Image (tube, rainbow, N blue to C red; front, side, top):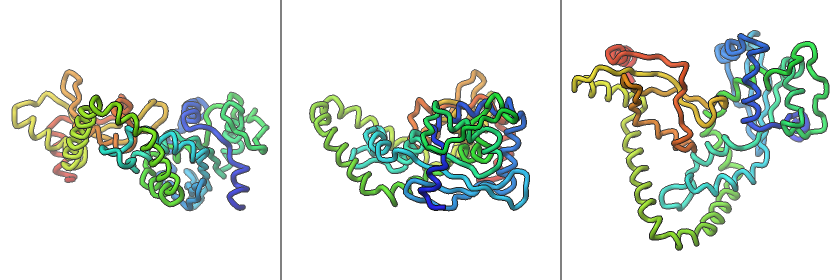
Amino acid sequence: MDSMDIFKHIQEATTSQLKRKQKSITRLFPTFPDRVKAIADNGGIRLESVEDELWKFKIHSGTKKDVWYDAYLLFKDIIPTLVKVIKDRRLWVGDKSRIDRKKLARKFMDVVDIQIKCSCPAFQYWGPAYILSLGKYDAKYTDREIRPPRIRNPKQYGAFCKHLQNLMKVLPFYTDTAMKWLSDFYEKDIKAFEKETQEEYGWIKKVAKKLGKKKEEEQEKTEESIQEVHELGSCMLWVENKTKELLSTGIEDFTVVEGYVYFGNIEDENQVEHTWIELSDGTKLDETIDQFESWGFYREDIKYLPEDRKEYSPQEYLELCKKYPI
């Protein structure tokens, strides 16, 4: 089956719509998170091929040994999305000579509309194929699934199978892959849109030169400061050094937290492991949180996940660092 044939069988929906809809899946399968985890334990996900619009993945079964399913991820309206993202000046380097390619890739992956499909039986028979074909999810291909899952999933919980759930969860970690993919297939477009954006905003810089100069200088200083922080290493290394520093000054009333941060809406599941320090009054000490801005997220969109966290006393964390040095 060539890529054009595949396109005809892929349902269409936006990432945010799907993820919000997917939250209801545990009403149908209370153990769904464990089923998703089993996929990672058994073999996980492999990116098999990349085309100009289509990525194909192999995703292992969560229950059967040596069984892999095909999953397709089609990016829709790539050019209009690139234009929109490239016009966001906050994603450009300090001197506005070019857009930061990693921020571009991260933001693109976050906002682009996608279409998905899995070859597993559950996708067809437990509702995802039908749910993704509903008009409110903008599935416009002619071979939509018109048979609702009246027996297996009559209330139409969820949006996709456990294999696609796994894919959606790890997709934010494919930023480097997306960056190379955009460069391989859309380099000329990106450069053209960069030039158009520079020309479009050129008059703004002339009019606001005096007013904006100070702000730009402050932003550049902030970016330099962030870079210096990150040169210290990972969040774990920074926390280890900060813990030692606090203890050396007699401050012990704090906790080291190993948890997650998320981007945008909590239901989107754009979650990444992160480590920080919390004082007894709840104040967070975290000088590496800005590292995620380089992924294309704005600081105000980076938030701490309130659950799924481990807490350590300063002494416990330092013992852990000795046992597992960075």
